[in-house]
Image (tube, rainbow, N blue to C red; front, side, top):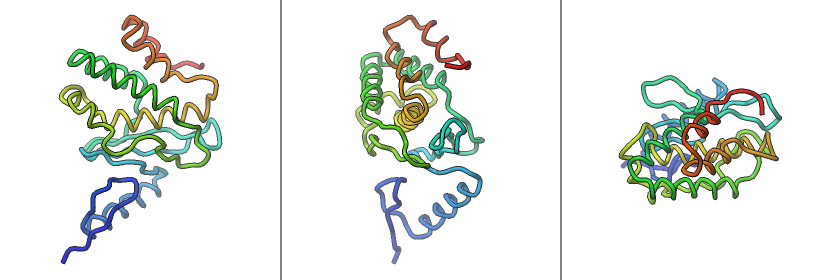
Amino acid sequence: MVRSIALKGISKERLPLWQVVRRRLRRWGLQLAGKQLIWTTQNNTDIAVVRGKKSPNDFVVKYKEPGRPWRTPRHLHLIVELYVKSAYNEKLTMELRDHLLEVFRRVQPAHKYPPALQVYQQGDEQKFAALDAVGEYTVEFMLIVSELIFIQEKTNYPTGSLTYELYKEFGVKERFSVLHKAAFRGRR
């Protein structure tokens, strides 16, 4: 007999007990390293947060693909990914962009660390699944990372958001100006 259990925040699937133990040990190891695991995507990319320095509830989003080191997603990565997906299916990419803008309107600032996903529900990515055929990132990854970045920006910058502006300008303004704004690393 194989006992199984559902893991909160990972997925709704039931896992054998040995996998639950393995995932919990990995989560504890990440916590010891200062990372709080928020989600693991279907292709086993871990999305975590680490404490930031801008406010008491600030955090920085990190991700780790299997076999690769931890990385921090940048605005430029997400916007370039939208352009790649747009070249493949412009209409569906614009629907994804509109969905992301709606997510931004719905999320609230974080009131504790680590933050929790507020809008994303497993399966939200299915409407946009065709876009997974191109680009480096899956739609699931983009939805989760974007939501966390929206929460982080609303926590630290209640009067504005660079990511929201970028998504709003995507497909409307010329590509150079959007990419230039996405690559900007100075102060706001």
